[in-house]
Length: 129
Image (spheres, rainbow, N blue to C red):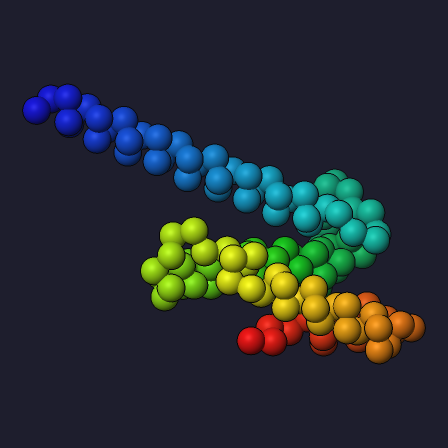
């Protein structure tokens, strides 16, 4: 009986460690995202509320980082829903056919609109099922 309890505690400890590592990686990635961009931000000027760096941080960098985190969470949730709805634990975009449809759309856009910009080509990357 004690072996099962110890085993359960080990599994819970590993589960906690994995989540802690994932959260730390998310925080490091978020900090990295805040300081990467066209204009250079120095951490010493960020605490001056009247500086240009502060305005760049508040108007562009933080909303961008928040939207990236929300988009990643949404994609993760949609993948989980796809797995649950199809009852397939190994479902991925390549096994369901979305990657093939996106490739077909990109090839069609290259054939019919060779001089189109990448922003116009993205409209062809639709699921054609």
